[in-house]
Image 1: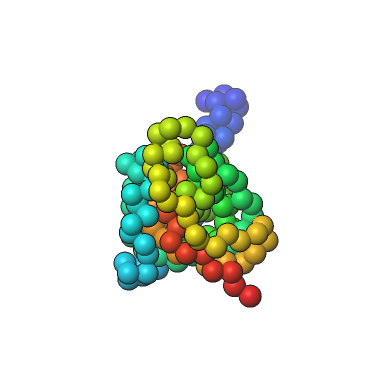
Image 2: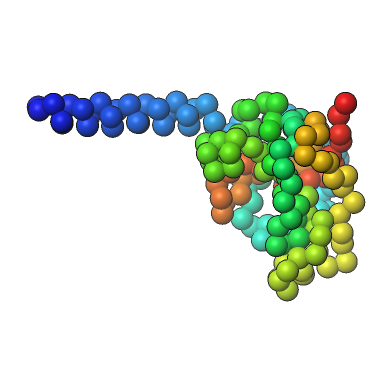
Length: 163
């Protein structure tokens, strides 16, 4: 083998090993299981395109610091959470969501499209909304968003600001 072939082989092997290490580090394991009574299952009727969400844990709680908040077109409030326990993140959270866990409070503001509006008809969330920088405990369903591939808490049943 010539030097170029050896160098390319080293680069490929290093890349594969690095990917496997990252995939193992960011496996997106489920957080603690809570009694289902701790989560509001009625919120599922207000989740837009709920079939895209694969439920991993029906009810859980995750603590961390709020990085930012964003109002999505579907009426949900997206919260980027830097979780204390990084094992709840998968590789796509680490890369695409910039190391945050996506947290979605359904029907927090007006949706833009008619399909999205239908999911929130006659309902508006009363979940406490934190500010960026707040340390919080988020309770809700732990899911994989199949459209993005990352892990989320969606829908959120409760947010508590911790001191």
